[in-house]
Structures are given as C-alpha cells and as structure tokens.
Amino acid sequence: MYTVVRCPSCERCWGIQGKASKCPHCGVKSTDKIQIVSVADNASDLQREVAISNMPEKLRDEMREKLPKSVAIIENPSAKLLFACIKIAALNDIVDLGRLAGALRGKGIVIDAEDVAEEAVSQGLLLHQTDGTYLFLQ
Image 1 (tube, rainbow, N blue to C red):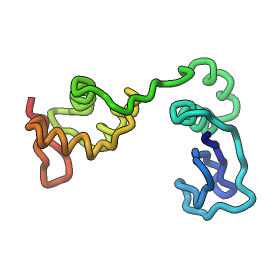
Image 2 (cartoon, rainbow, N blue to C red; image 1 turned 60 degrees about the horizontal axis):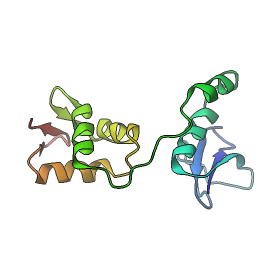
Image 3 (cartoon, rainbow, N blue to C red; image 1 turned 60 degrees about the vertical axis):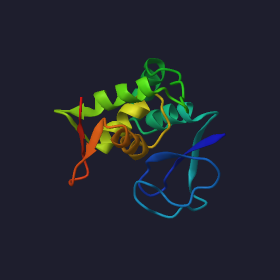
Image 4 (cartoon, rainbow, N blue to C red; image 1 turned 90 degrees about the horizontal axis):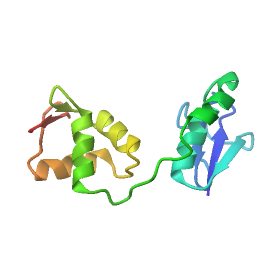
C-alpha cells in the first residue's frame, strides 16, 4: 500500500510507502502536519495519483478521466524492450541517463537507468563518455 502525501511547506505531493522523513521537493522534515491526499495499491497507481494531486485543482477531475488507469509494471523486461528504451532515449546517438530513466518509466520498467546503461555498455551497445552520457553504437 502506498500513500500520497502533501508537504505543509511547499504544498507539493509525493508518494511514500511507510513513514515519510522529508519532502523530496523542498527538503522540509515531515511533521504531524503532513496531509494524506490519497492511497494507491501499486506503484503504477501511485504515479498517477501523485501526478493528479500536483495539478491545479481545476484540472484534476478532467485529467483523472484522461490519464490511463495504470501502466503495467514490468520487473523483468526482455532485452528487446530494454533496447527499444535505449533507442527512444538516444538523441543524436547520445543517451542521457535522465532521458533513459524517462523512457523506462514510460514503458513501466522499474529497473534503474544506470544499471540498464552499464549492461548495454557490457554488451557493446553503448560507450560510456567522460561527460556522463553514453554514445549509442547502432
């Protein structure tokens, strides 16, 4: 079970599992004043609820109808699916970990982007560059 909470300081929402220690947006330590906004049964529903909770109030009902109910979470993705995410993240043959993380999340993959990139390096698909990005060797 996951909980969507709102920071009493910055009023942004985030998801927790258990007890919150501090706001990931402003860094304020959690207090008894933290507001519980909603609950979610799985990580996919949590992502949706946090996104909706951080929208302006006027848009929430409309977005609740438009956003997909949930994205299937894939814990053991195929190599083909991971390769597809790397291709999506490649911009002019450069893969940034932030873009790769977004591509993975978009496909419902819960593996760390850096782990995927390092595995791709070991497979000869990517080359780690000195600036922290990766060159896509297609």
